[in-house]
Length: 370
Image 1 (cartoon, rainbow, N blue to C red):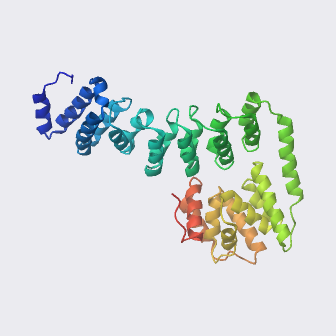
Image 2: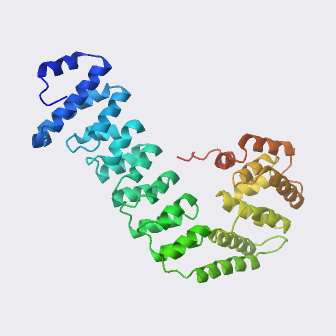
Image 3: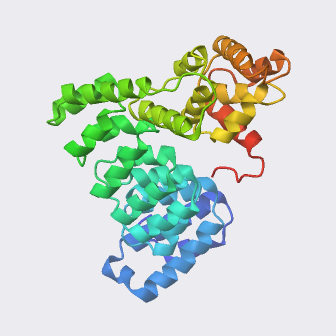
């Protein structure tokens, strides 16, 4: 609808309740505002337009709001309150506004990160040229999908400290590693740190991009793992020093990317039940006391949940359970069928759900993760 649209026609549209007419009215007003020149930016005009459009948008259907959001996404004339409201709307409506509206400043984006859900947060993390306050808020919230989106945003203003925090997070969050290796703000020092826990193809990418001594890094990792294995205590009751040694062993293996589920069975075959407990806690991010409680439980299902949560399959768990019972006076007790039901429920493709169920079962009074 052109700027020459008569007042009578707009008035007729305003009186109609038909969705098509409401859409025409909203878009006609948007077209008029877009062609109004600099006058539209005057405070009084902004207040009038904001009041009018906010009332119309509040009563508009989803599809109409989506069309309006597309139209206003890259315009600089809409009132800030209107844009902020659209940015908090359903994600299909909010997406173009979050991605491109010049009316959204860093302070608005930080507020959105706090108020909105994960889908909106991902869009913010992908927005071009987000500033340091937005980046720091994303990192402090530590939502995996949002962190991954940020790592893939080459235009984000990520400080050296923020990049270091992302590299630290990539030790546990594998989805960060590939975008970080290729990120323009990655440094040689951080690349050496990242080298320890990425796969072979990403190590090659690091070596090709940065001046790192791959042989020296590989040798240091191998030495750390070898030293940790040599220091592992073998059998018998453990004193505090030996338990601390086990903890350091698992920590070194974890840092070097060498801690795998196969280590659980290996530790049991070496008659190191405490080492098994420490490794399982590290692999799942579980509380050590919670794993010990599962090992000593009246039934095997809690231990099964913990193992499913780190990717142990059904056949391997049967062997793990037999070894644990052999080393622990028959505990966890109970019918093995109770553990099989855990695998029937969660299966090999749902480890995150099993891990969450284990944490809830171990800490029923804890606040659920947000």
